[in-house]
Length: 177
Length: 291
Image (cartoon, rainbow over all chains, first blue to last red; front, side):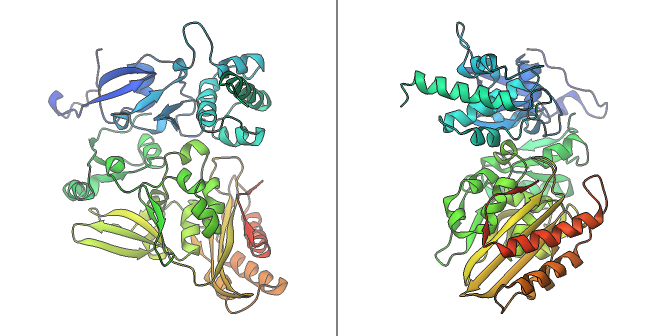
């Protein structure tokens, strides 16, 4: 992997602060050299080429860049890449297997939970964090959990339905009661 | 948007962190949850030369009560930890009401109460809550620890009294002498927006008599506003329509709102009065977003 740093002209190449970090993304172990000011969202999109994580507002509002770090939903535009040293990242690319969609992806398909699709990866990752903790959420729980993710198309109705669809499927798969 | 270039250190102890800050001087910033600092750095409103990330310092993610009831909240206690805390729900109605209203759920996964107090945004919700409860900040520096009442901690918008080599290690909420009640109400245009108006009310009662009262206002002035005259008017009395009305009026008087895209000054002042009356009129208000 070739890395190019901006040249500010006022420091020697050896003075650019670079750190080597080790982390896991969707189950794959990685080592990367990053400048501390690199945002996690840029590490994911540019460093790892995982462009399913979208950059929307870049100001911590919209939630399109939501990924899981150690199972917890975070806005990846608001975390430094160096901070994931030793941690486990999940992105939307980790949801499906080679042969099957994840129930959340199926749910968004079945219930028409997306129109333009820009917010969808963030919605799905925030929803995954919810369902990992609470397999049987109410619609209110879903709406509360997704209140940090903005969608300008759907009006949220079908997104809530999609997540509830996924929750029901996941429960039936795990032999739910 | 990229922050400007900085050196990054992730110490594993407070002593190490304080040494780094001492060497970094005015150009160093402590990074905890980063939900205010990182956006500021991206906008280049803040361009520190050194970031001291305390996320790897063990033993700071607590919130716990001393035997006497004093509540201590560590520098890495996240909003989400407080939102889900059974202890808070049982013993701290004002804090329990505010926790789910901070920013949005994903920001709450990272952001911290102590960081919010240090950030000293006049629109910060926790500052009002902690001020109403008479809380303080414990700062640790090379010479040990000192305790600073939150009312003295903030000296202006985004300015606090910490020395460059001090770290705010915990927030402290004093033990109640009576039975606590109160709440936090926040008027916001949408989830995650700053408060148009926020009001924190913290009461302690003995029987029907109010023995301690704190009222503080968010977003209606250049800093968090302590409505001390309003709170003092309640002490020694039972809550009645008359005392509630009086306190609500006094609180509205000290508000210094400005007309902006979130509403007119008159409207905001009116909402202060409404929220104070609503909070005093109902024993406990759990999370409620006023729309």
